[in-house]
Image 1 (cartoon, rainbow, N blue to C red):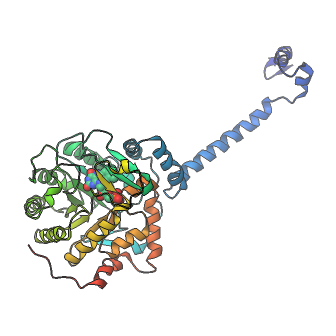
Image 2 (tube, rainbow, N blue to C red; image 1 turned 90 degrees about the vertical axis):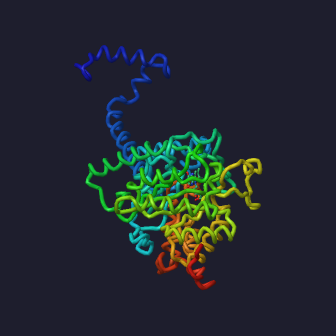
Length: 444
Ligand SMILES: Cc1cc2nc3c(=O)[nH]c(=O)nc-3n(C[C@H](O)[C@H](O)[C@H](O)COP(=O)(O)O)c2cc1C
């Protein structure tokens, strides 16, 4: 007789050998049921259970609403990685598509018309996260209505020495002095071309350069540190080289980490710059991307008035209000040593400044120029406050650092709830309009 092909004698010898170092006697061992058949039945059940669990967890974690992102992955990344490492890892994961998806369709109340195009929602990703245009589609899959890449400089440059990004966790804020670390126009153009080839291969080219219906891709243009001050050449090059890949372009004259850049917000300098850049934009083939300027939240009311006049005169298509601030509000709760790090502060502490600039800009432009609000948005209420102060759409970055990718869906749901049957478009500028009549259009 053979059991599983082994002679019984051999099996007995094996049993005896196994019994000796164990519980004592071979009889005790022999009285326990044979484990082979039980294992054979249980193993596939274990394997199937583990596979089902893994599949379930994967499906769950690929839903942007899953709490695991907000309560587990994001805090773990903050605990184990410094701010710049966490940023690099997040971009790397997104490059490989390892990000959750917002599978829920956008509520109709969130639709917004911008530059004659209808967007499915007004929430955008601000510049600075995807600096080199490496993970655009992953960002759209989080549910953003607009994604802005950059800032991109003409030549590659490394930016400032590390460390250059700091979390002010108690304030939900960040200080960064990246200093336009950029792979340069050529590399970004190559990334955008590769992406276009990919979308073409899948037959997904459409009227949007985002290649997603109802969503826009913005390219934010910066300036090399070594370029001469007060000249617009770098921005003109950006328009010429990258303009045909963008649904809109942004002239960034407000980053605090490039010496002399913010000085380009001065009336006469800005006028010459924007005229020159606008000419370059007008020379592009149709459809020409709308051209915007991004301003700082630290401007005085007089400076805002000057900028409104310049924007109006140059017939720009919009203003992003605003970049990070060089101020350190007295409300900051984080370690003062950290708060003294030089660089631009972002997150909730900039909200009051940004809100003030936005209201003023809406009043000054009489609501005729689309305004994109950016600074410390963490909730649907923050977004609606900006809309009521005159924002056509909003952008965020720091909120996603602290909350993770689910913030986009949460904010969209909160807006839809808080609109109480109204539409986003209905509330734009309503606070400012009710407070004061629109002034006559500004002029230089
Ligand atoms: C780490 C970091 C890098 C940034 N880099 C850029 C940039 O390259 N260009 C730019 O225009 N704004 C940049 N910003 C500013 C953001 O686009 C945004 O204007 C600002 O952070 C305020 O929004 P938030 O409070 O939602 O982050 C950066 C912000 C952060 C936090």
